[in-house]
Length: 151
Image 1 (cartoon, rainbow, N blue to C red):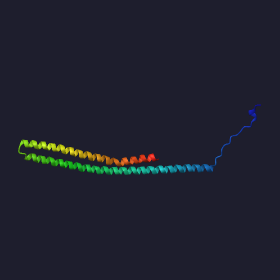
Image 2: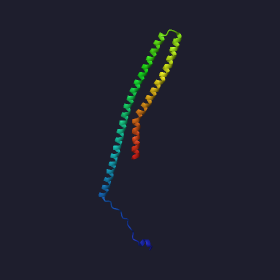
Image 3: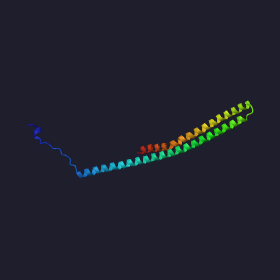
Image 4: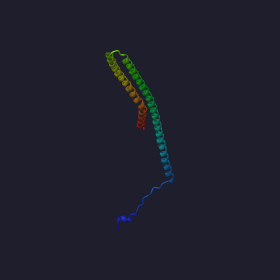
């Protein structure tokens, strides 16, 4: 007979599982999962609240800027109308054709200057408005990025 046949067969030992320890481990894993879910929900709620505040601030700023632009537009329209009526009155009082030409030339030069000044004012106001309206959203976005980097 061969040597392998003379050796008794070895049996592998199966580790025993203690049900109490297994239950405790499952409970610990579940509690950790619940805690992580609560933390994630809290962060989500905080982010949602920050987004809501940023949106409200943006809407309020846009409303304020819209009102300011409307008032500026009304003032410009009023100034233009007054200049036009003054010009028409001056034309009616003109005594000669050369005086009409001079009044018309002066009026057109002043209207161009007035238009350039009004355009500059509107550009400054709209640039400021765009910056003011976008600031809350930009700040909220930067905060989220900082929070993500910190995490």
